[in-house]
Image (cartoon, rainbow, N blue to C red):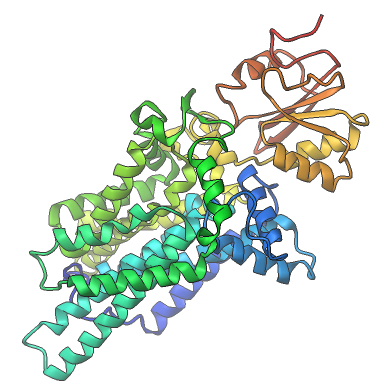
Length: 547
């Protein structure tokens, strides 16, 4: 099948062939290497500590506690890694992040399969290369959050849907012999079941059910372009299959304790900070704030500055091509983008890690544009195909260079179009640093602090964990809050992180900035964590010092 007819979603996906399989294997291996390299180089983030604690409880048959607002799947995989990794002496951070790093490697394969199905074999290979090397995708797939698994199963759902549509189109083609039509009908039903299973796994990864919306919206939008239809009865069967998979992978919602915790979580009782620093300002960052929260252009800015220039230009070319042609394959990717951006842009709560769910859509579009340019280049030496082919090479090389040069801190990449890495503290410091450097700061306090000193931070759970592992359970843990921080009458060590500036602590951070820090942790030449030593009676807040 040629790339030119692939967007109509008919026929079987083209075979890879031995050379293509070799290239694909190299892409997957490179993608895994980038994601696995130095997994424990950064200490736990606050969110990751809860995964670590929950997974340890799983090994003792305790499926309650905190973090039940998230499904079981990732924590179950972490628990399996604990069983394997502990006897081998693996670092806790490595065991906790390993499932996502491996899933990130699998995502390279799924991007290739999806792009091949939609736009042909050349797009599949280029998509695999971009997914393997993408500095932002690599960086965010190395942290222990559910978004990597969610993005993986979302892509699997879309791929299986596209294969089911193609098989269904062939099954209704009167030109094909009847035995071939029957075979394709059987394949259609198998692909539909795989799509249902992918949906179940998606729901068992994170409670974002709206990410299933691209499928029905695509089928509705493309109904005039194809004969494939999904009857209501069949739709019900697939939803039932998805729910069975979901229940098998994630049965804690059936426990009463989960509902009790969910009520407190939804009412905001579990919220600690509720705000986010973005482009030089602090914003309310809770869902209920809507358009009054973190601005709706957050993810547009993220797209502009977190993709390498070559990838961005190639993806925008693919997007323009998709909007112009609007064939079924284009519509599938366009609906994916539209649903994701509409929902997440309108929400008042935004996090950089969510972008893992939609970044592959841009990589698929970039691969589509690049593969077309390469195909036209083979047909004749013309300026536009030469430019497109060069841009494709620049995109892969640019992403790979950025991913290698920024390892193991790939999230800190900022495109030259956005001002380069010098601007990392200005755009998304909370999301990009993800508490990197905090472990080292706590270890410094643990090594030198007075007995029973106070340690005041923004993330008390990681502070307790690392202080305890350093043998300093005597340290009193507090949050940097008015009336709470440094009120114990002890020497107080206050930790200030570049990525954690909030409405609740901004006065303290500004006040402490006038002092000389007791300890500074630097990453890539930037101060990311500062520790201030306060004497008994001193407060980090300017109006709370005791006389």
